[in-house]
Amino acid sequence: MMGGEILLLGDINVDTILPIPEFPVPGRDGLASHMSVAIGGAVVNTAFVLDNLSQKTILLGCVGADVWAEKIKQDLTKTNIDIKGIHTKSSYASGLTFIIVTPDGERTMFSYRGANTRLAPEDIKESTFQNAGLLHISGYAFLESPQKDTAWHAIELAKEKNIPVSLDTGLDPVVRDPDEMRQLLSELTICITGKQEISVLSEGKTMDEAAKEMLSMGIQLVAVKMGERGCLVYNHEEKFAFPSFFINVVDTTGAGDSFTAGFLYSWMKKLGLSASTILASALGALATTVYGAGSSLPQKQTLVDFLQFKKSKCNSMEQRAIEEVLAVLESTS
Picture 1: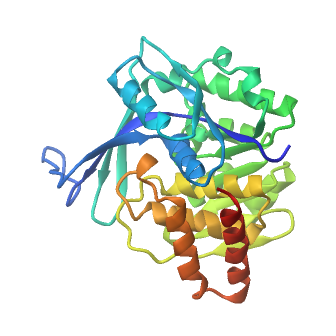
Picture 2: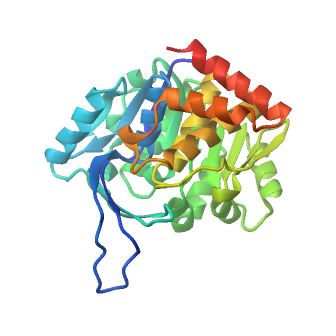
């Protein structure tokens, strides 16, 4: 089934962003120039981007019964993101993440996952999948049970209904439990990962060899994030390499989640490989121009303006891909 809603299963947090001039040595202070507090978490950031693009989404996750949960719900009710899949676990605090950002835009995160890990299989209702066109899961959902068991349960429900499954592996889940992540690969239609992650998953194979092996398992799209070097994207017909857009980086928080949103949106809209890659790259780049993620991420018109500006600087093939993206963006309200 194409079209419909995207289900997003993963952590729902409140992020505190602290820009500092340098990361302190142990025992010293890191003094922030300013701070912000906003809703975050990988799938939440992806949901905000998709919502900005008028793509229907449903979040599947947990919060605590605390003031942070109230902020999360207040922020989400200002959007069209469906929160019927968010459950409250009164014995646990909501997830909190403290994000330290240095002048080069690099972010270091300290997280308490709290209620996120308590998402249980019975919290996932079969009816939630009724209008779903895609299930996307954050790799962090596989770090701890019962959330891990719930993620597998969601995959089984998706398979029963022939709904494609997408995974953003994340680095920590791959490093902590590579066997679990390898077991997931044969269940996927889309795999979004990084250069270091794909090396671990493939046990040291070259990127091309690793991608070929993943495609042979039934995956239809493999996207590899390579930071400043851009990305490599594979399907069964072609391989597309795209350099990162040159942009003034403020904070890399949410860049990978925005990149992921680009591929999920493209899948739902049936965009070609090059168009999908350029859209994902543009969204990832734009995410680095603001502090924080979530509701701070750039809006649709900013994306349209950015692509129109970059179009003249691209080759003819890339220009056609950008035109394909712009046509879809302009056709949706």
